[in-house]
Amino acid sequence: MTSPVHYSIRPCSPQSHCFEITLKVAKPAKKGQVFTLPAWIPGSYLIREFSRHIVSIQASSAGKEVGLCKLDKHTWQAEPVAGSLTLVYQVYAYDLSVRGAYLDEERGFFNASSVFLAVEGYESVACTVEIRAPKGKAFADWKVASSLPAVETDRNGFGLYRAGDYDELLDHPVELGAFHSVSFKACGVPHQFVVSGRFRGDLKRLARDTKKICEYQIKLFGTPAPFERYVFMLYVGKDIYGGLEHRASTALVANRDDLPQTADQAISDGYLKLLGLISHEYFHSWNVKRIKPAAFSPYDLSREGYTRLLWAFEGITSYYDDLTLLRCGLIDSKRYLGLLAQTISGVERGAGRLKQTLEESSFDAWTKYYRQDENSPNSIVSYYTKGSLAALALDLTIRQQTDGRQSLDDVMRALWHKWQTDGRGLAEDEWEQIAQQVTGLDLQAFFDSALRSTADLPLADLLATQGLDMCWDYADHAGDAGGIGPVAADRQPRASLGVKTAADPLGLRLVNVLDGGAAQQAGLAGGDILIALDGLKVTELDKMLARYGVGETVTLHLFRRDELLVREASLQASPRTCCRLQQRAEDAGWLRG
Image (cartoon, rainbow, N blue to C red; front, side, top):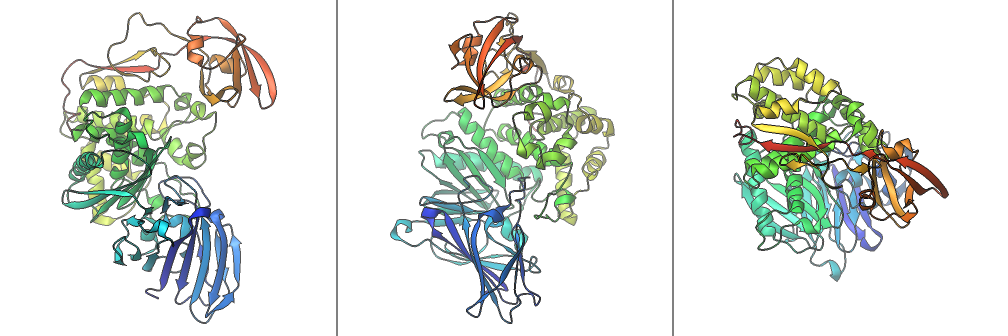
């Protein structure tokens, strides 16, 4: 045994999606060693109960079986033993997201929080991990990618790794498989970008563009970077998107078509979305992985950790993700302002912004944001999107009131310096205090309105200080989310039912029925299947509605579960919630940094 706590993990059955983990404890507790598995993973605020994926577990000592009692849904206690204790257990891994574990014959991936039991009393003790290769010729070209510090490994990365404690172990996900890899240095720090899944794309360009993002953000906070090396792990497939930050790596999933294509110098909308995701997760290396709420210092992964500060850690990160793309030269101001207009439109279109504050959104992430249902647009606001607009408003407020001498950048650098000095998490009111100390401004009224009320942010007035006019328009078509350009003087509202839909074999499923809309007034509900409008099968709803005028009445046939319903709906005017930004003068420096 190489340490007091030693883990060994191997893909024992890729065909049935199972990892086998062996956990050895040199000196178990005299009263019987207790083991626990986290109920959630940092950065994703939902109780996930990873222990439900443990399909078998046995304990032994000196070759003899040891009794193992389950105390609750994620806790076990072994009978007392005189010598060392060994656990062998299997974990079912078929979660294609970035939050759990996955294994098939093509690739493997795991977060330690979903596969490695914590040894009670040894959480602060260093541990070792042996990552073993799957057996068989079919897996001969599999490799390992991880930011976990290696001790002794073979040329493919299989072998022994070490973590300083259990918290560090949880913060280094592992990718397994015959992935593609490209490397670069950002401000002298080695970075590796691994991509798995089936794709055709220009990984050298991906590396060049990612390097620009990394170097800008490292310089924003100040060198040196807070890690000695960094690993991006990207799985590409179909209709997937997401990321999860870690202290020296990030796990990402995206559509394969979003990768840049060879010889294509333009940045497609899909590639832009991927670059924004990369930028977002990398920024978290400072903002939440190190600068963090006191509620997360340390994490208690057995239960929810409540904070009203997620707007600052996710919202501000969301503000800087696209802004980084502009400031590092990947996109121009027109492209950036188009993205900003779309975010403004998206927040405006949700009635939840009038019912939930940003602090409430942060606090209720566990029960509302991460457990959304058909009524969520009517009842909640996103601390990501409205949080990013609050960050924009704060940045512009600081710039305006200091005549451009200070900005949100200065606040973020001060928070970073504080963490470097004391390593403490922020108390619930401390973020606001530091922002006011750094800028010398009285921002109490701003914070009260932006964070603790449902009042709309004063974006139009603030953007005007940067030479931008913000106007509201009717959507030109169903997919119009706003952008750059003037408001058309002759554009009229479209007839609207006030719904969001998704395809269904029978017609269209109503994903959301929006507050006050024609569908809600007619008694329709989320989950209903709309099959006919005025006796005609519904396929493309917006094209059908384009033939109607505002105020006309239509007959709707729909299924609610197995019941056929008929409803009359009076079509309403589509709301003027499409943001258009127009640049009438040179900006005052905000876009340039």
